[in-house]
Image (cartoon, rainbow over all chains, first blue to last red; front, top):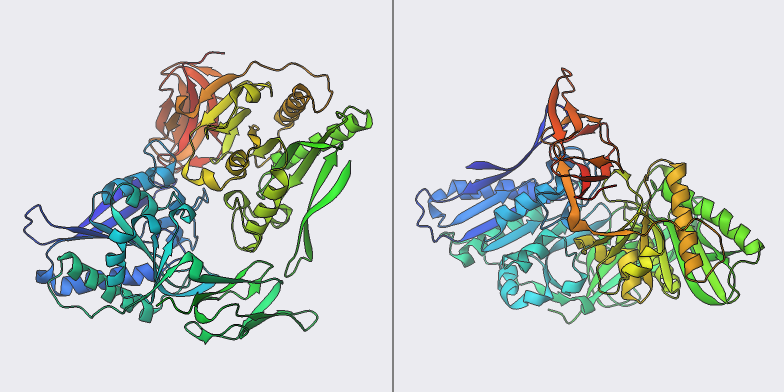
Length: 312
Length: 311
């Protein structure tokens, strides 16, 4: 059943509506577990659009196997999605810094509050993201280190290549996942791919992971593919490669490539002089889990992340 | 006055990007003043330009205290102003959401880390900030309630209001918050506008800073004594929202007293010109903020009122 969670009149004629699709057995006992799947907090991140479509399609295909409630919110920032804008158009606010929101706040904070109240109390919430336009990333779960015992078993269901455990102090405390975890609703973030694109291979892996999670929660009575065993990484094992020059980045490696210290990751060139400004080299042994996708860079731009060896 | 290079980096197409500051006087690092961090903070940069002129005059007269030094950094982000963007020109990140920063991180993170390293050495930190909502504001001093803030020091600016607020989710990554955490007494000075110049309120901001610096013994400058500030908590600001969307016809202006039930604004249907909603004051008080867009969404915060306060 499609429900409107937020409705706000736009300036002329239109309405901003944030909707969810509630999938639930026809007869409810009242004790069903509830999984929330949310997407589209950033208007340039589209992986979740396909994932939401596919998970709804698969549930509807075997509706009698559904034993709990799945609330799917595909488009939490609909105006951003429509206008190819990462943040909330007009105010230019980052929607994922506004939670838990406020009913007396401006439009973004008001919408955040309505969404938060609707999700709060669910057993699990999965927040689907892509990367931004700058990076291409392997499918990965991100979670805070202050609730690892509860979150890790959920994360392992999700069929990603990697689980990245962050110190909670480094996580944006206005994010949906952070705010939900603070109020006792277990919440995880999945990142994959790059902005403005749908990578079906990554998305289908995550869809399988969501079905495995539903199995784990006891709300999906159909066998799903066994989840891939992910590498588990802490912040200290993640190596960032930032550029020390500005120019155009020409990559020399691909995502998932194994590299050793000193291997060339790519080069930064100056187009007007035709010279190589910097050869970017790996500073650790491991796997490339993020690689620069947008070629124009400046000093400090993130070029790649390497998951160090010995973390699996 | 000495012009000092504080930060430099090479860019892809614009050559070297340099952040400069101006120092006045010599000796103990007394006060650091930071201006525009976003490309739309024209008023904040304008205030800095007025302040730079005044401080040069004061220094020329020998009226900087003999053992005190001031640092003024007019802008951290002039490229965005040049390119007509609000946030960082190349990746849309926000310098004032990048503190405490990282010297090995992205450009805005490096700028934040470098500036904080310099600014934390000063006893007092003053930032000309812009409000997170677009509109006109009653000029005021804002401090976050970190437990380290001082209302009595904020009062020395002589602004009509000092606003104290609980930390919002994003405050932990702002300059002001990190300044306070590192031991600098930090104040945000809010002026009436952001995107355009309001000369009168810009000069009010300049006077307030010069008054503070005088009272702290950093400069000698004869100016009006200003106000004994009313200290208000953000909780005392009542948000007045639009019930409907359309053209916003402003009736109540900022810094005016309003009575409960008084008409503040009208929302006009943009298609037929009919009045859709009349926004009335939910409380007696003083109008502290009014939004300035020609049209509003439903649920837009149109006004903020300091409740039950009289002129």
